[in-house]
Amino acid sequence: MTITKDTPISMLTVGQLQEVLGLSSEQKPQPVSDKPIEYVYGLDGICKLFKVSKQTAQKYKDTIISDAVIQQGRKIIVDVEKAMELFQKRDGGKK
Image (tube, rainbow, N blue to C red; front, side, top):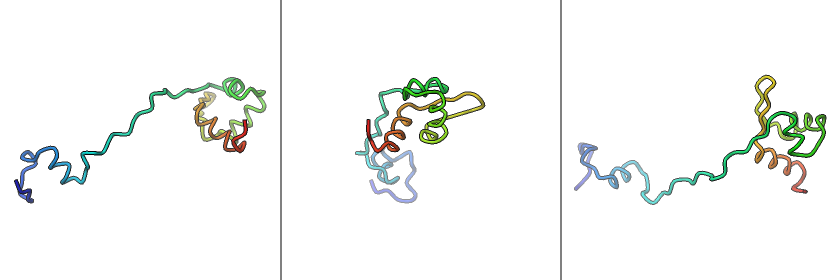
């Protein structure tokens, strides 16, 4: 069957539709991470994560790991994986 501008979409097979749309049937969906995102909460969570005092945890929250921190009012939520990544970049990968 020749596909023209007048060919109804309902007459196309899935493969033909993918071809017309420029999609490859060999494209595989991106795998979703099996690990759930881990969070710590508040300055106490940062203290336990990095084994530091509250004063140092406050400094980390405001500087080094600020991109991993979500804060609304007094609630502080930290993405552990992202915080560790940022800390290791700052620390030159030492640890």
